[in-house]
Length: 295
Length: 280
Image (cartoon, rainbow over the protein chains, first blue to last red):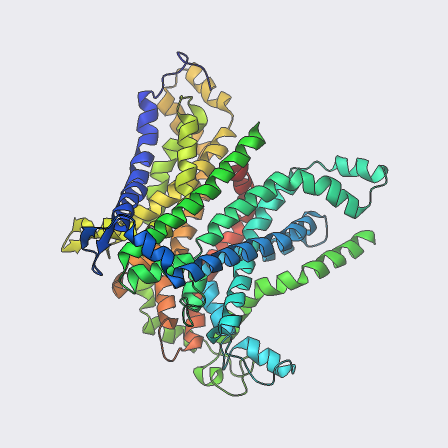
C-alpha cells in the first residue's frame, strides 16, 4: 500500500463499491449480534418478550447447567476427533492423488463427490443406512455373521455419537483434500528429483520435504475445519436431535434446542456469545498464522 | 510396467475412501428403486427385486416437490444475483484500486466469514420478525431468507473474486484508457468479459450453498408452502412415526444429482479458487 498523500483514505468510487457489502454485513451480522447481546443480558419469555435486566444471570445459569457442561465437553471431543480424523486421512489421500497414476482424474472426482451432497441429505442417507430394522449396515453385518441381530445404532448414546463423528470426518475429507492438493501442486517436482539423487527414500522425502512444505496448508485446513466442525449443525440435528436423552448434543444443537424448541431464548443467546468468543479465538489464530506466512 | 504397478497401488490405497464416497449414492439409488413392500421385508435385501420408478412419482405428490423445487430455485437464483451484485464491485475495488483501509476491509470480511449464520440464527430470526412485511413480517418470506444468504455468501465471494481479478493483467485495461476509453467503459468492454468465468464459478458456489443450506431455512421458513427442497426432504424423516424410505431416497436423489453434476464439472476450478482464497 502506498503512503499517505499518495492515495486518499477512501476515495468516493471506493466507498460506492465496497459500501453495499458493508451495509449488508452490518444488517445480517451487526443487528443480530446486538439482539443476541441484549437477549443474553435479560430475562426473556418463551415468546421472546424481553423482561427484567439480569446482567450475567443467563451466563451463570448456563455455566451451571449440566447439559451445557456435557455439551461443551462433547463439542471438544466432536471437534477434536472430526478435525483430527479428517487430517489423518486427508494428508495421505492428497499425497496419493498428487501422484501421476492411471485414472487420477476419476479418482479425484470420486473423492470430491461427497462435497456435492448437502450435509442434510448425507445425514438422511446415513440415518437410513443405520436404521435398526431395515438399514443396509445391519443387513450387511448380520449377513456376514458379525452380529447375531441388528443393532439400534442411533438409539444408543455409545454408538450414535461415534457414528456422527465418523460421518463428520467423511464429509470433511473432500474440502480438506482439495486445500492440501492445492498446496502439493505448488511444490516443484525437481526438489524430489534432487532428494532422490541424494538417496532419500519415499518416506524420507515425505517427512523431510512434503510435510514441511505443506505445513502452512495443513494449518489453514485445520483451522478452517475447526471453525466449520465446531458450528456443524445438520448431522447431529437430523440424525439424533441431540438425543437420546441429550447424550449427543454439542453446543450448537443445544443452543438451537433451547432457542426454538424449549423456549428459552435468554440462555440460548448466552451460549451463542460463548461460542462466538471461541470462534473468534480460532479466527485470531488463523489471522496470526496468515500474518506469519506473509512475513 | 512400473506405472501400472503404481496405479494399482494407488487405487488399492484409495479403495476404502472410494467405497465410502460412492456408498450414499448407491444407497439412494437402490432404495429409491424399491417398492415400499420390498423396503419393509424381513430379512432385508440390498438390491431391489422388482425395480420401479414409482417412488419418484409418489414422492412428487406427497411432498409438493414441484413447489419446493420452485422455492429452492427462486431463493438460490435471487440470493446468488444479490451476492454477485454486491461482491463484484467490492472485489474489483480490492483488486484494482489502492485505498488505505484495504487491509482492514479484508480482515473485516474474514471475521464476518467466520461468524457462521447458525451462531447468529436467534438474532437473525428476531431481526426478520421485527420487520413488518405485507400481512406479517419478513419471517416466512423469500426476501427474508435471500438477504441473510447474500450477506453470508458475499464475504466468501469477495475473497474469491478479488484473487481471480488480481490475476487478470491490469495492462490490458490501462491500454484501453490510453486509447481514450473511460474507466467505466474499460471495465465493461475489457475487464468484465475476462472476468466472466471467475464470476460464474463464484456464482455457482453461492447457488449451491443456498440450495444446500439447512439451519437458517429451518428457522426462517416455517410455512410448508415456502420451504425449500432441503427442508421438505428433512420433513419426510423428522418426527415421523413411519418413514417411507423409498420416497425419501427418491427425494434426496432428486435434490442431490443436479448439484453433484455441477460440482463435478466445477471441481477443477475449485482447487484453484480455494487455494487462492485460503492463501492470499
